Length: 316
Image 1 (cartoon, rainbow, N blue to C red):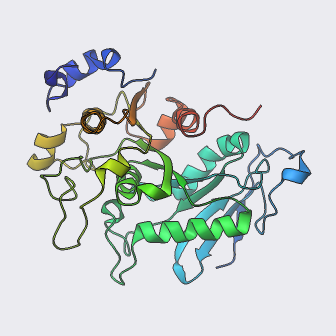
Image 2: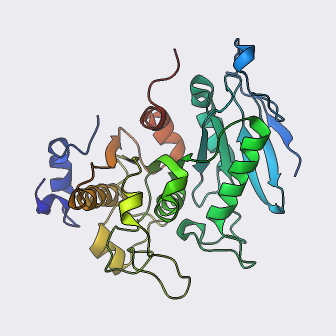
């Protein structure tokens, strides 16, 4: 695609060029909920020897930090060494909704789900990986929770699969940049804005180290090798109250979530090409979807697209 298609403000040109880019592909757990879709698992020899109930959403507090909560779901179809998908909420903190809408796919694929909760008072800027007042890093807590979940469920945690929506997508792509060796693949749903692979700009706008927090200085050669998927609703073109609209972001990234996701995907693939790496990012519009996690799941089949990209075809 020509440069005009990705210039901030040229939304129509960006849409028109989509098909030509190659970018677009069409404490103690407490039982809180049992899904209606759970089916019996027939291969008992391969079943997870789990300390957690299978087929139920469980609330947990992290050992060593009982103020950090996460939801866990071990599907009835899980086998020993199952993969873990961490699904991260946005500013609405709708972790339970993430679990409820993702768990039918977790059952089909045999993937263990985890949804961390980042309370506003403790983690007002978890999207940028900023630590809490007591010095706890949100990305470090997620890794510890995933390790705990793996120990309890028989899953594996060395390399995680990550998904985030809106503010959660901001958290996920910055997690990948900071810890690429811990991520197998990731998917981003409608982030409000991004850290670009630009070594001249300071974090969180680019990769240059930021003085106050020390964040930045990430290894682009490493994080550009982690495969990712960007999904944005085709109707997610309004600014809205939750979208950062500073002149700095508007000039660098575009005016809507759709345009910003497209521009960031292009920038990541261009940065990979400069390093003779294959393009890591696939961009996928979600049909009939505004900025809504639930509607993107129901109308845009976002969950199906995420699981197919991260895990391939479901088991036969």
